[in-house]
Length: 333
Image (tube, rainbow, N blue to C red; front, side, top):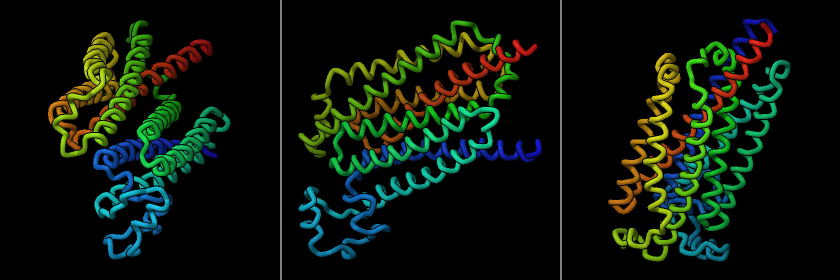
């Protein structure tokens, strides 16, 4: 393989990897939209939807006794709703597209078999985890939307995001090597790890809050949304206050690494994205708290949380890999 063709293959891998990462963000948003709009049972069976590979657009396209058919399968009160059905179908279709993108990403990692076999291992691992994620999606439907299953489904999505970011960072290792990492104080590494841990804790608490809200909604009904807040568990208030801690942590990180952050465009863009995502996250959290969890706010809230996690993960892994490349170069010299 010539140097030119090798460069073209690497550019293709980076492009496909970035598209795959963006698609995963979109899937997380659509998955949250499914949950917020109550569309999880829009398709009561899996992998088909009402027994069809392409969902119906009108109830007349279903058997007259479809209520009884799905009641016998354990799904009571299965009423066809075209909006909910196609929202869930979009979620599944996006999952299939991501599966193909991840397969392509895995295949493209084999170009690194001589210089970085770890990338092949990561590519295979991501592909396997996406398959498990698809199985978890089926289990979510089979469990009739048990909150715990939904939370596990979400956490596994974040693991996939983290692994894709690690893959992309390794693909950009030459660029990382060229950065001046001495501009960063030594305290940034542990502080960044701590901030990332805080975000993970915040996401886990958020899934528990969401589970509690789902339970309250089932018990009190949609019509009593304004009364939900009176029954929120203690973890809701801890989760709400935790966002301020994360904001201050990120501000501290950016301030103490400003010499590095403002010297490179990518680090500057990540810093801006982080601050905007956290502030938006806080506003959306207040909106859900004060306005009885409007459906539009929940998917955006989760998307912002994923962006925060991704930015911090990218930064921490970039520092890790960049520092390693620098040490290897020093030993070579």
